[in-house]
Image (cartoon, rainbow, N blue to C red; front, side):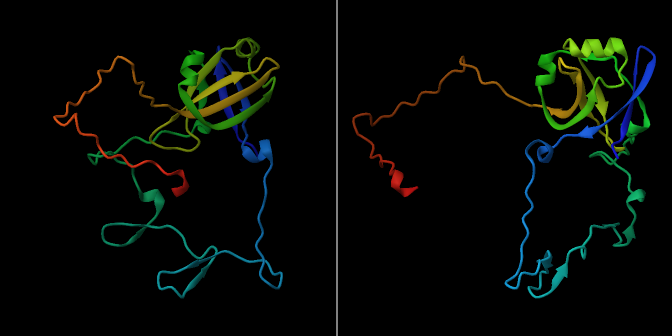
Length: 206
């Protein structure tokens, strides 16, 4: 069942269900089934390091141990920074009421690469004035955490002209621009009168 986020705009609160849009919903999907020579369906197994032990699917798992080699539960772990200082854990966005107050430009949105896309539905339960702004091209941004953690991802709320409301979650792109005013480096050789032997590139080698 889709989860819902709680929003607030102009002191009006409302909820919207998140429906994740992935490649399978857009383009469909294909399942590859492997069978043996007798037509029986094959299962996945892992070959152990000894080269002879087969571990069936579900036979391995991740675990956590302390410096003494003792098993510890995930709930006992605490996030720390590079200096060993404990970090504050931020709550999940599903446990909060998100106030939509930060409006961003299209350029700011395009500076981010979207990694998750959610449909909030057509004419979502948004406050009427907010929905009109979104349809007119406004984009609102907020911090989003699917589950509690130490860092949040930027999320954006926008809408198409026909009233479909979308939420994009991504990361800011780090792009370095190279200008044309960079000075070129010239090398002078004392053997300008001697031709260098250059091997011709043979495309048949590829």
